[in-house]
Image (cartoon, rainbow, N blue to C red; front, side, top):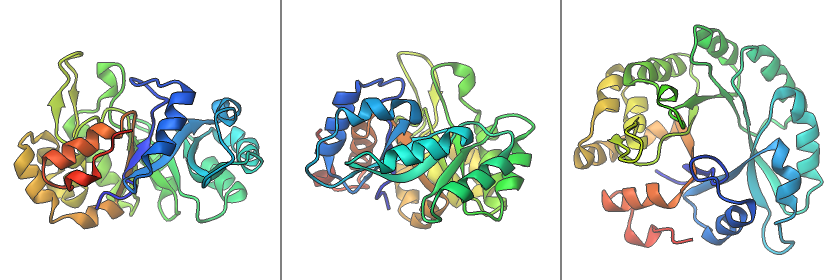
Amino acid sequence: MFDRFFDDAALFPPGDAPMATAVAAHRARRSSLTGPFVVTAARLDEMREHLTPDGPPLDVSLIAAPADLPDAVDRIARITGLRLAAVETPVAADAKTVVRVTADVLPPEIPVAVEIPRTDQRDDVLDALAGTALRAKLRTGGLRAELFPSPDELAATIRACLDRGLAFKCTAGLHHAVRHVDPATGFEHHGFLNVLLAAADPADAPAHLRRTDGPGIASDVRNHARARAAFTSFGTCSVTEPVDDLINLGLLPAHERITA
């Protein structure tokens, strides 16, 4: 159920790992649970300095605006040791341009996730993505309280995606499996298992997103593996913490623990 669920966003807040540390740790993990290494187009040259020629290429999820995408994709193709696995674009108001550019630049097997604005333009962007192979990218937190959507807002956006047949990934804030309050900031974080249940049962999505009963959530998740078709992955600055949560909840065996 959790293969390639955790995209490695170690470079991003609040982790902000140095490039050398993040690349080395990603290579050392070698876990089927970990998705691609998330990197912006602006840091590709820096990343090149920390690659080694031995071993399989490192899969990357490239964050790039549509205007920067052709050059960035070409640069990845010319960097030994990198392989483009996915593309993510920043908040899109003109989603039709994103659809056109990605179709022109990328092979069809490369998944593309378009960040959805948390404004009244949301449905226009989702409508433009509907019927394409593109996915939505939903922001679920950040470094400020206002970057965390409420359960009702996030539930409505999840339903809006599913109503249009759109899969989605999430970014920021999903540090743990179950909804919780961060003692350091006081921010209330969504749990990634809560989001999985919301995708499996969108009619009751607000209630699922508010739940804090870890064992009950874990029990329900066991019956909803199909929800991964809708909730494809999420970016996390620590892939060890969410895996530890799943082990502690009995959803993964202990030997899956990631130590690097």
